[in-house]
Amino acid sequence: MTVLTAARALAVLACLAGATGASAQTIRPMDYLPLGQGAQWQLQRVAGSGPADLHLEVTDVTVADSGTRYFVEVPGSAGNLGLQLEYATDGSLRLRSVEGDLNQALDGLPLDPSATADVSFMPPVLLGAPTLVPGSASVTTPVDTEFDADLETNIGSVDLDVHTTGTITATWVPAPSPAVTPAGNFSDVVGFGLDASLTFSENTFDTSGNVNLRMDAVLARGVGFVQITVGDTTYALVRAIVNGAPIGDFPQYEDIVAMSFTMPPVIVLNGRALGEASSGDIKLHDARLSQTIYGRGQLDAVLDLPAATGVPVSISGPTKAKGDGTLMVDLEGKTKVGDQKINFHAKQRLDPTSTSLGLKVKVGKTSTVVTIGLVPIVTGAVRISLDGLVDQSAQAGNERKLACNGRLFLGEVEYPIIAREKLKVKKDGTRQRTYNFKPTDKDVMTVHAEATSTSAADFTFSKVKPTVFKHEFKNSKVSGVAAEVVEP
Image (spheres, rainbow, N blue to C red):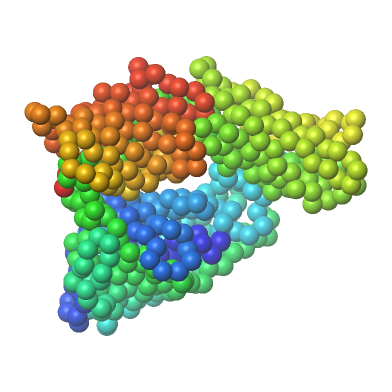
């Protein structure tokens, strides 16, 4: 498991683990960590060298016999992290499971981007008693569990039994007050520390991985996350939505914090190549396939030949979605080993059932096709999550410009985006809105949307036109448009 991913996981666990009062008084965890469908927190780095921001969002709520369960998603560049928390019927806060990338939990596995480490804790890890006293509350939960994972490789599917052992210790302490953040100052706060020591192992490939980390966090009553510190990096709250109410810097009118819709399915290849491939004496290692939302593909790998080993390979080109649901891939590049030129070309029309991509390797006058395994995602489900649109206009008036960062999800594959909005307030009070969602690294339109509103309850999209992998889908092809709207 990478240090970054483990740090993100523990940061979330610690912040979610409940809260204590700033003084030694009895408190309830649920008062300091309000969870609910659509709750989200956006924090930014204020010190240290870690990633620039941290986003947490409750994406699913399930009522069970044992209590109410909340799935908290933490998107990030190292892969998405998911945690299932539960407020039990007695009010205690428990961690039931953690979901992440299997290849980051076990070092040395064959690369399979679809393989998931879904670790269920039985019994659940206790993160906070129904009531507790900060400074006098510490609990250690032993972990000894197994989970099954399916690993797709170029030699077929492998069923892994992964064993997880170790301990998770949660400690509640008073915190300095007030906690000062860009979202405001919070006086009723609590400190929480988490120590985790976990070992992952499996016998099929004889791989293992270890996590030994410590982190600290601060939660505020009725708000939740206001500060997270992991390693040398501290994050502070910028804005949040808790129980449908905004906290922090939001615009003066109602606006979206998320939207979703369905379009005709496309084939998503980003991060979906299997890591190893070979043909005869030509071998590829650590093959990684990326695909931008605007349709640029790139394959990076390490090539072994009889004459040389460890040759870096990088080829790129368009990946264009077609109206019939197929994807045209055309990647090419070249390298040189000594005086020998090596050319690479992968040109193939993929359909929704495709599981491989043929890479033509031409060494001198000899050509060989190396088949690279794929685990593509075929989806038409789109979800956009925003950090919170903020007014960028310098002058007063009935036309405003707003912007923020966000994430666009094609199924489970995440792309960072920039959201820009033009807001016009008509004389009758109606708000007309035009949204443009674009990739952060290129000025190419991804989704154009138009909406009108008079309140959060009266918010309607009149047009949604996505352009994905160089294919524009008409508004008539888009259905099921839904918005999550917050009012100031």
